[in-house]
Image (cartoon, rainbow, N blue to C red):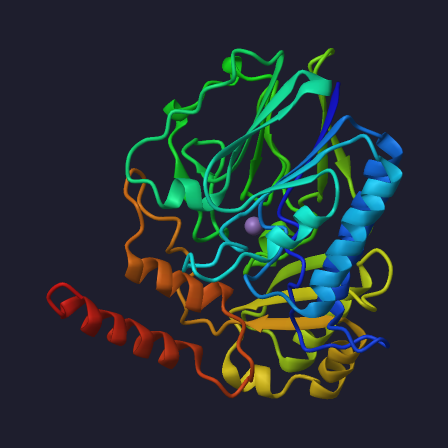
Length: 386
Ligand SMILES: [Mn+2]
């Protein structure tokens, strides 16, 4: 049989305050479009089983439009593949912190053939496939204090494990996917399962011939520059051939991370020219794209004298244009961390504020704000039990 494994669609994600002609946030429309493309492609592939390994929604309370659109997509999938069950588990993004808050995913159980695990671990059996699916949603791992032993069902010929978790494995590095529940590597063995479908890590990563993170369908992590060149899509696994195939989606919006330009010793007009050159080298226009250009060693006085009319024009043409200008006194070599030592919270914060945090106005002083944030952190850390 063939299984399609998809995860981290993050429906309802929004960014950049840009609205399309229908009045929808452009990025919210983007994640919806990527999911629609995935449903089209899955319908064409006609698998025997579909698993959604968590973070269907970006937030616990998605917009009505996101809820309705997801409903339409599952209904469409059902119409295209009436014999194919779809199993959906909750991830950290679509699990409410309080159990009293209902989970929106339950709504989708109204669609015949859609099965949802949003709270506790749950085993689903599909006799017509001779298959059992062990569902381990975020809450099942986050709420349990003991180690969970994940065992296949000896009665079933096909055993699938679906989990939304931060796997304890050197091949995955969770830079931006905060808040995942840890899944120790010893909790499961790939050889015990027909297929292991993981969600949470947004980059497609094959961990064994029959185990993978399928990655996200759009770029929605806080530092999406890191994801600029990472393909987005879903995975197909053929249990008879043991073949795992990654299907890349075409619809995710282009993200360009350009530079860095070195402005050391350059006059403002020379920085303008360098900026123009790096943009001219882009394949196609920047229209509608998400673009960052990093400029290093650029003093404030040079930044102020740049051609800001041109920069405003770039901001209007791109969906999002971020000119990330750093003054020369900033030391850029920290943060990789000394080997063998985890970064402290202060180092993490400093790294984020210095290199990842996007200033909303050029008048903000990154250094002053970083110093203030570190001072606040120090004060909090000085409180006993704080
Ligand atoms: Mn996610």
